[in-house]
Length: 165
Image (cartoon, rainbow, N blue to C red; front, side):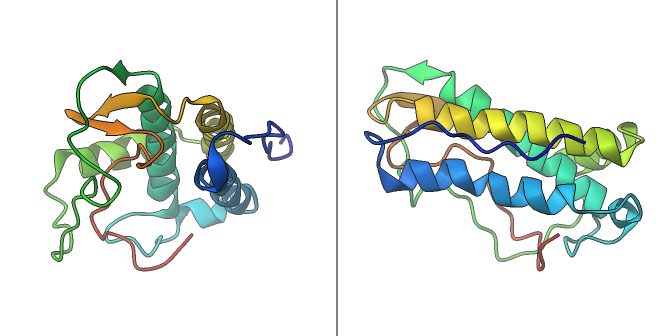
């Protein structure tokens, strides 16, 4: 397995927030790299999900970052860094079709090393894309328009997890 890649690109004009966002992709990738094959079949601490499901969710999040950063918009922002997130006080029930899709997609990988490889590839690309993004640009995601400088383009967090991987 190749070593976890961390971007060496400098981000002087983007500020500490974007640099931190970019570097934040290194931590979960490193944690996943250290997992044994058996760890992928264990409960993740996220309601109803195994570790493999959580890793697959991280892959989808990294893909969402790439899609968002490559979806420019000239419309006015509709959300800011605080209003972007849809936080729920209610734990997930498992009825959400996207939750079920994540579990099926994770199972389709069959071999844990494939999840590791895909997370490293897409996660490192998301970090690099964040460093290269124009902080003044507006981007679209989930039918919302946001500015990269004030919002992290990621999927909404539902409060599913109570522990880390």
